[in-house]
Image (tube, rainbow, N blue to C red; front, side, top):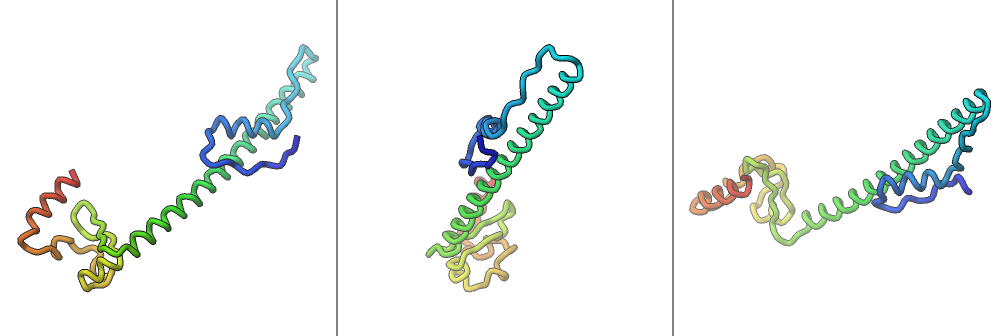
Length: 143
């Protein structure tokens, strides 16, 4: 059996990773009614094997985490592109109604740059006649 780790499949269970680690290492010999010194050696070998399995298991989990992290970064980057390049104005607000993110179309809509918009209350850019109803809607959304 080869000690070369195989590439992890995405989203495998911890049990599957453990089984793969076990498969990569030879199991230790079973304890028998051997003399004390031999029993100790076999116990040591068993513990050493368990540590090796744990090491392989941790390596596999680390590879799995790195793969998941890469997938998350790609998804985040794609979302960011879709958000930034959308043809309509998008504004992300915090619970206080302050702008935390705005895309290019939103900046063009208000005629201000990102730096000028971030941190400002969104209601300041809404028609006075609509502020009360929008404030109520935002309050309900937050709750």
